[in-house]
Length: 130
Image 1 (cartoon, rainbow, N blue to C red):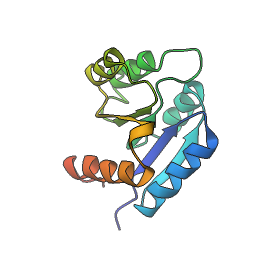
Image 2: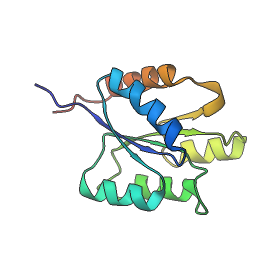
Image 3: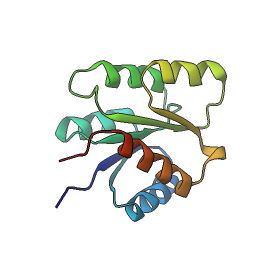
Image 4: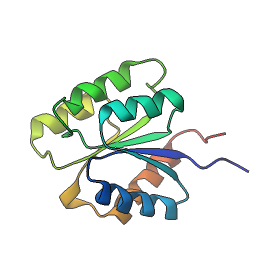
């Protein structure tokens, strides 16, 4: 039996994170939720997720910087990254995609169900997990 892919949700709004986690579970994904980048780094160091859903507008540090570090570290470079944020300026979108985000979505423009479908598509485009 193949293992379920793991999604790490990096989102400070715990209610919103739980809503997304429930939808991901319906699509047979395991989820873990953290509220900030420090917690995300701890979780990632313990067990690499298959995909990270991240709000780049968290806390005082720049999510774009965190994204770049995640993408450039050898151990985390292959993790799929989905940005789910309220940051809608073209510069941030461009920089996130240039920094290695696989997809970029605005919270106001995608439902949890539609996001789960987009994640299904990402996993279908990547080699099968063992």
